[in-house]
Image (cartoon, rainbow, N blue to C red; front, side, top):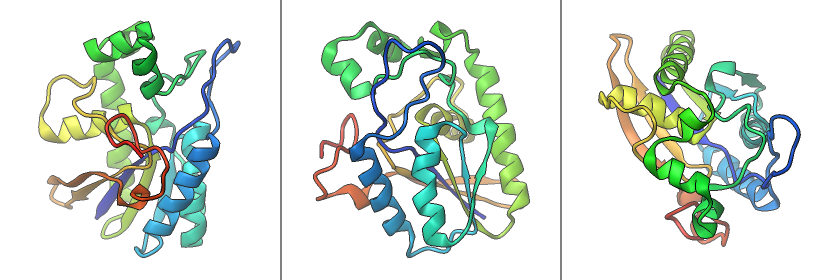
Length: 208
């Protein structure tokens, strides 16, 4: 089967919030999600799973609608920051020299939130493998987060550090082939051709 990991579109910035931030998509993010859905409409996707966080659900919904299927929520692909009281897009963290940006660079982002990165990766892998087992021979999209994508791909590559080895762009697609034998192969990373020429933000390194 083929598994498409999709990072969510650009969310709004949320600060000074009492409780988990869980932001919705920004206006640009809504447009990114629409372009993603149009791009994937040329492929048959048999199931669309989503993190329960709102930025992921709003990204998944247009994809599922174009495929005439429903979004299925999967708790195990929620981001490690799901309980954080603020959400600031990483591009803004970098531009403002925010202290959290230094945590990201140093691989401390999980620990500052009290999350064990190895336990987080274990939960992600368990959830993803359950999705794979349920959909043999099919193409499935899992709309989630940068930390989740890094966790699973680092697992496939045998990278010991699960805190992140690359930056996934907004609505980027990362394809994994999952064989019944248990073999997992990465087919592509950071597909963003659907955003090229749109004038929409792509991510930390992609410009617009």
